[in-house]
Length: 433
Image (cartoon, rainbow, N blue to C red; front, side, top):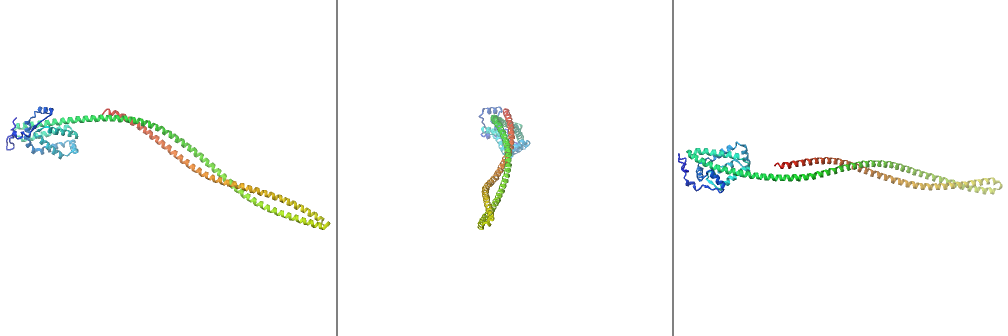
């Protein structure tokens, strides 16, 4: 191959000698497949010399190439979205300038291969599809071909240059696409591994969820049964509270009735005490009168005795008077005896009045004490009745709350059943992942 194809023409091109770039080119591929690929492309050191010779000619057009490249990318919104998400156009332009110049460096070695592989991995990572990479790469190749057509003076020079560019671009495409494929396969394997782990985790979670739901369902059923029992007990407690309230109300009414009776007894006792007091006063007055009568009888007896003495002195003329005096004396004695009997009777009456007054006093004291106890019992019954009413209201609230809880438990039971169905669906879907 004639490497001295860049002949002088209007001082634009000058002959490039082999020795000028021979020491700077390298074609070293240790991978057997890569060597075969290079051989099938007929990529040789002469091609690398041509690329290295073209590099100074392409350098002034790098900015134009890059600007045209990214202007064309803006026609696809998904590509611009990827750029904005992961980098910037200015930054990528600088990277592409370096990359294009390195393509014409004439260096195909381990670093060349590694860099293309990293590019592919980066493309896969950011989600750039191979079709857009191929389109962009083809656009870049066409632009370079157009520039070379304007720079090289003869068709033969153009043919050799384009041929070398196509070879290096083809190798780069193969490297990138192979790395694309390898990375995609790795990502696919990783995805499958993740899917398998997800399936296992989902199956495990579904199984655990099913076991938990079974236990929960059993617990909910037991809780529902116990709630029903509690509701029944609350109903019985409410019924008992109502009965107790009725009995307490009746007891309080009976207590009020007995209290009214005790009040009447107390009033009657007080009236009896008042009457006994009056009777005692009357008895005392009678006793005073009896004493007066007794005194009069004694004086009458004394007068009769004196009259008898005087009649005896008078002799026969005083016999009639003596008889009268004797009768008066007898009457005085009888009066005295009768008055003494009345006095004894009054004394006994006073004794009975005193005993009766003492008994009535005790009755009055007991009645007063009982009345106070009745008042205390009444207050106690009011407290008990208030507690019973509060207990009844609490039982009513408890029954309502238990009814609400029972309703919520039924909803929870339905939710558990729905979750169990969802767990089965989840397990079924996991097998389709």
